[in-house]
Length: 310
Image (cartoon, rainbow, N blue to C red; front, top):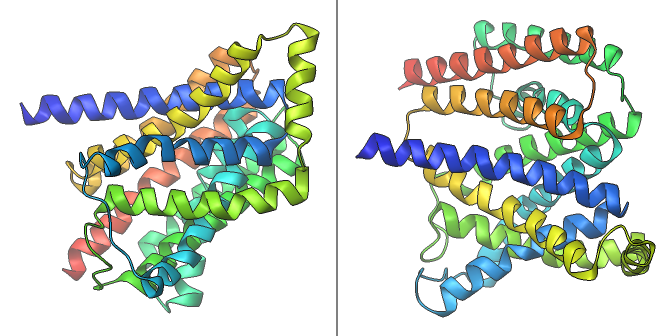
């Protein structure tokens, strides 16, 4: 029964992730306002967890101002992860954005060394070589390469690595507030990120999104309902895949997690190539394969290093 439940979580995790990447790309293709779309997606999550808290289905977290201040820098990084990914997915092929995202371990190692003084075993650093080489090859041979897509995907990587480092530094061994389990922590970060994104988006893109929305409907490409539904689905599947990821990863050991995460990236790349008929050069396929294999080796080497420590 347990294995059936885990299998169900993984299937939903992959399904929601694939759906998000497709809906997100379709939304960006329709309206090229990435900051506005990222904000809508982030805010959509509130429609899910707020009713759960209000109706008492899930215990609402209780945090004081000092604890919210502790979480604020982590929420800023969370914002960077999402915005960087959305801009990258809009600026280039979905497959290319995920190839670059596979290089996150490189940034994580660098930030861990600089900010936490954490020096890892040589075996772990050795696994970074195929990641760097693979992303380099894929970038050179990528047919839809743009500097904006590369820079934005790297912003997402840096933000994700910084979020991990800050979480370790500020929350390690600390009990923040009440009822702050993994799912509620993600919900609180989502709420703070939404509050951060709204003024930034208005400053950068103003209300241009709404004008563009009307323009797309006027052209007959979408009806009001169809375009609004697309925006909602991109936000709903974004929150859903992260929510299910917590449930799935909480049920498995780190090695299964590492393998699952690697397979997920391959599945998304393949699904996006099929869905959007995006051609990949031979060099891009070879490069992405090397990078993703390197990511798996990194995860396994990190888990082995942690096991030795314990």
